[in-house]
Length: 160
Image (cartoon, rainbow, N blue to C red; front, side):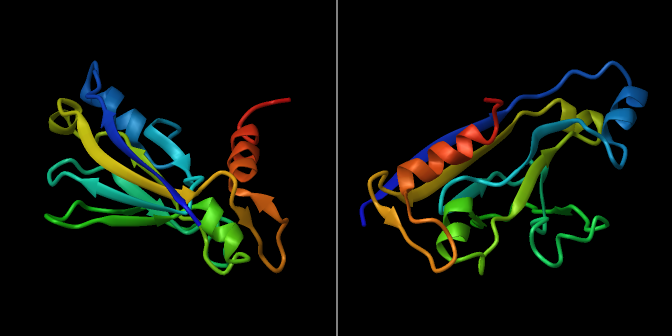
């Protein structure tokens, strides 16, 4: 198998806020405002390098897992640690493992105070996946090429 890897520099820009009241409204529990909306990665594995002092990444159990099916499941902060790497399992690896591994749901929350608002958030994502022509076989899943798997996941985000 030939791996197709992609290094991506991620920038979540600083945000303007009119007042502390507006900031409180945007960050209350159950809000629908994020710097990056909840999602799973399409690839096999993501290595995420975060900068200390630029918090915001949160994760929770995948809704398809037994734990994640609980709607009360919390979003947990993934704090940057000097020299640390966050590892995300992606949808392709989940499919390949017959669902034994779950892609983790993650997001980047809104800033919680004026200091966080004034800073951009920088991180580096290293995404790994199988070459597009590689056949992904699993016991219970469809036999599919890695390229078609990614196309299928992309199509799921759009109407016909």
